[in-house]
Length: 242
Length: 242
Image (cartoon, rainbow over all chains, first blue to last red; front, side):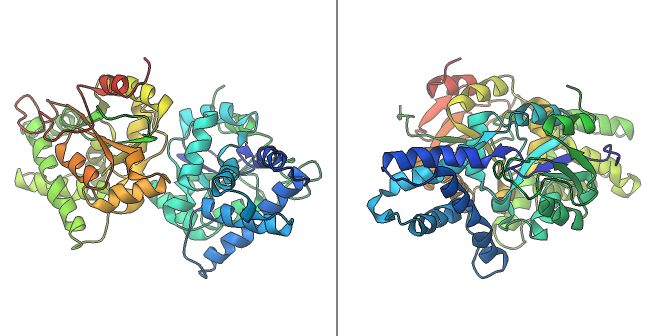
């Protein structure tokens, strides 16, 4: 295993890695659907909403659209998905749609996340490096006591992962060298982009992020510097006492 | 007194308002001077170093120079002040100068700051809105347990207070209206700029920030929305239980 002694900061993917977006979004979608007497499966709608995430960001990564924060993309994607499912969004108040859009601010951490982060925080600077915007990350952290040292990520650098500038500019903001920073993610693609930029990499397996039938990111696809079953095991592998 | 019920976030000036920069910088300057057998008064050098702060930022606020983070300005100002005091900076290693420059990362909070912030954090989002850079704020917070929800400020918006865009863009990042945000500072000028942008204002008196002979910012110069003798009194005035 790679020596962790030169690592000063850990950057975390959040959706899927630190928090369980699927159950959280489906819970709030379910309440919304009940309120409006709509008979759509809440997990199906949550998954459909999430599928719009990558193409929406790609418009910005490609340069076809100026940067807008993720709350804006989520809100647009929600309208699109509702339309796909035959729901007339015009019949629903803007406040009600905003409230549902904020489901992404109300996601619960995986059971090991807070304890693992508290252990890691004693030795390292810890911050999200998420595509989620700052306010989203603050709301999520306050609701569930995620102990971040700072909120970094897409909105700070005004670009979306996996664009290299997101990793490199964040390392620069931390006044560190890439090899002093470790990206932590449940997604091989995020780690591959971070490694290309010279960061260290830690894979945390989240085999039910996409539900019981998940087929992607079940295993490390490269020899990442650290591989752990959860945040507590990562803390142990990085030498953080319980 | 103004009703605090619509306030969602508190933004804090840090140098002087949350932490005691003068004693902290003088302490580290003193150790540096001893190490190099230099007979200069450490408070005099700390004050001289701080006096370069406003003119250095003014170069950037005026548009004459692109944004650079405060660590860079502090480092340049240190060389200038050393030269003014007849110290040959070339005789000192870059590492030693960097170490001294990081005195600004190692400042202690005023005795009431951590307790007051912990109370305020239970009801409000709390973040620094300092001219200090992100890494500086993270180092300071980790060393002394300042419980920020996020690190906002000059480096996030790439501009220095009191430029209006610093306040307005930060409010926008928080997805709030200006009147839902309260600027907390020991400096009338900072609050005047925040009020011009529509933010609420809270003055916390720090009568020894500049030492025992301080003559500025001893009193509120406008009818700020809240006026408190320290962070605990501010928490009480904003309805936060002990």
